[in-house]
Image (cartoon, rainbow over all chains, first blue to last red):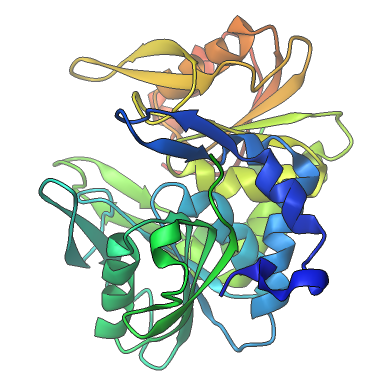
Length: 186
Length: 182
C-alpha cells in the first residue's frame, strides 16, 4: 500500500517528505537514479513526519519487534521502536553481530549477499515489522521476513520510505503486506 | 564526564542490558554488545533520554552518527532535540559529493566520509557512537565536522573502555559516556 493512495485524503506531510529526498543520477553505476534519504534526515520536520506516519500506523497493532535492515533501516527503525514500545532488532551484513546468529542468503544482480540476526532476539509468536529506507526488487526484505519467520515470529508488514515502481501494484511481498510512503522521483 | 560516575538511577538498568561477548572479533577482545540493550525498550528509552536531557538546551543543530551503530542512537537524539542527523559513513556508501578523513586501525587504515553541504559553517554538532575504544574513529569524525567549519560541542557514547585512553585522543574535546567497561 502506498500511503499516498487515498487521493484527496492524501496525508499532507508526504509531499514535503518526497521533496526532501535527493535523486543522485548514475550512483552506484550508470543508469541508476539513486534515491538519497540523507537529505531527508537534514530536514527535521520531514524526518519527524516520516517517523510519525509509521508510528501512527503501527502503535496499535500489537507490534513488539521492529527489525531494521543495515544500514539505512537503522536510521528509521529505532525511533519507531522507541515510540511504540517495541524492541529494535538490527538485521546485519555478515560478521558484524557478535553473538550466535542465523543467516539468510539473498540474490543480488550479480552474486548473493547475506543477512544475519541474533538468536534469541525475537521470540516465537512476536509480531514484527521490517523497516528499510527503500524497496527495489524485494530481495533483502524477503530475506528479512524469512529470518523472522524461522524463529516463529509473525511479520505483520514491511515498511519502507520509498518504493520502486516494480513493487507498485505488487503490494504483497512473499504474501506479506508492504507499506510505502512515497514513490521514487526522477 | 560520565553518567556512570554521576550514578543516575537509570544507569544500572542500561549497564546490565549490555552483553559482553568474549573473543569477538578476535581472541582477547571482550566485545560490548549493545544489541541486547536495544531489546529492552525501557533501557533503550532511558539511554536516549539521558543524552536528550543533556543536549536539548545546548543549541545543537547537528547530530553526526558513525556507521553503523551510531545510526541507531543518533537519529532518536536528533529528532528529540530538533537537530538534523548526519550519517558519517564508510567509503563509497554516500551517493553525493563527499569529504573524507582517514584514520588508523590496528593494522592498516580506514576512512570516514560525510556529504558536502550537510553541515554549514558555525553549526554546533554532537558526534554519537555506541562505544569509544582508542578514539580513532571519533577523532576522524570530529575532523570531518571541523573541515566544514562546524563546532564539535561534545562526543557522546553509550560505553567507554577507559583502559584504551580514547578520551585523550579527542584533541581536548569533551566526551560524555553513560557506562564504563573495565
